[in-house]
Length: 276
Image (cartoon, rainbow, N blue to C red; front, side):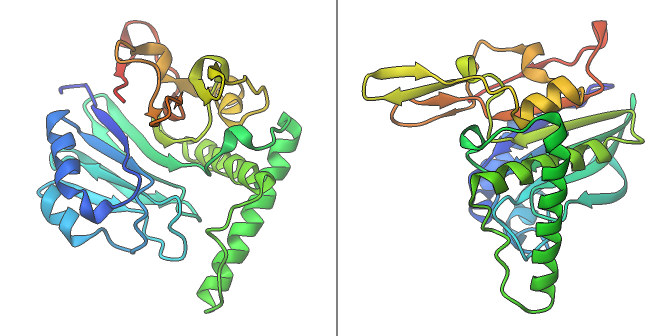
């Protein structure tokens, strides 16, 4: 501890209220100061009472939006860690952030859940990305207004490839805005996209395992190479392997990330470890 902040990230794939014991065990076993969760599928405005009881005396915060749950997220904060200001919650259930105070200063920690299947969605040039983010924002605002007026909302239905990429670019812009005014920001969660598919993805095919491809216009590459986020995998102890997701057919991928801004420098560089 001291001036060390231990941030743990987990994609729980739903069942937030049913996985309380597991979540508490991970929090304790890894000595977490902050535990960020993606893909919680929790739609309530308040966290499930079962999790509140299981994680006490530590604090749990959920997204707090009932109108969309497909990319819901949550953050658990250690009882000894002081927080500051209001929690930031995105228009959709795709991102939230909290400011914590450490001996080294203030740090903003965010968790995200981008739309699924981005490796199969169209890519965008730098110029196109801003227009895509604007389109997605208008869509989310319209869906939210429809829901609040008592109408039927299709906010969970980000189905078309173009809409998935638009929403990813919108979340990218949200994270850029959120990093303003803080000395350090950490983003952890499910980005649902490989940085370089030739090494970050292995596909199981009828003819055997094959690597993916590198897509120059992907959102995660824009975030790292254009926006200046540091992909902490580059600083990580990777003895446990470079993949964060596997399936029974043998396919593997790294689509979950820990990003920091500004990047770590010199002897003060953070150390990260990735365990599947």
